[in-house]
Image (cartoon, rainbow, N blue to C red):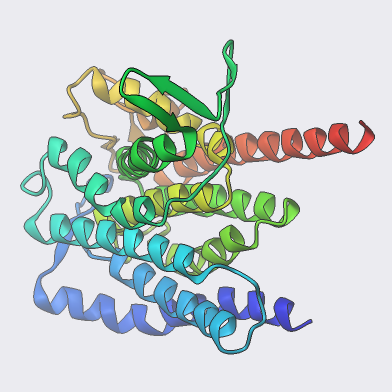
Length: 346
């Protein structure tokens, strides 16, 4: 019962924190001139920026409660170093994103820096030597526990810590940064993916991953209220990079790497589309006076293909994309449940 109450509070405290702080924060952003144009509106209204700060604050308060419940109340048996390492990684990447937002759109951190900095941010997770077991790859099968190399024997856990963790953190944080730009899109995608990971973590008894997922989920749910169409505040790179890093950390803590890869299938499609433009393409549409969004002739983003189905308002385009992601999430949950049933009957 105490654990259930703790999980509820882990969700509610970030949610309430964002709801309480957001109105004053949005007003302050306008006063300070920290605003950006809403490119998908015909009138290009100015909208407050740096919304990722709100989500980070909510997430932090929630995780601090989790640490208190673990360390002092002894309500959960979770290795504290894992949570702290994950928090350090997310904090560093959130900081990188906020700096990028402050410098300005198209003037901030370059693409190669977006790929490099998250590797440094992954160091805390690398340092604690998380020892997830070997993974199974299509056509290859289960990887061995040890690899014999000319200079000696290296365990899979060492390769996992030194190579796969930084690749995972970098890949996930940059992936979520690509598919964004519409009111509520990146926040909604983050809610669906992290929510699915939380459900699967609960089903598999991965309490550490669940404890990490719930606070950021609560913060994102509250932030969506201010970020949905018509947006009062943008999340910016601070939000997108932090969301991706959180997805990576949850997957690493919960040993759910393959599940994470399946859940971000839309982002792989976006990667291919953006790569054709050397990552210079945007996800914005062409706004009309009547509120509809038309897709540009040169389609550089998955958002453009959803706009091209038939012209619709921005919120309808976002709803289509979130529905597609929800279907992917549902399929992944069903696959996990079927695998569990198969193991049970065997």
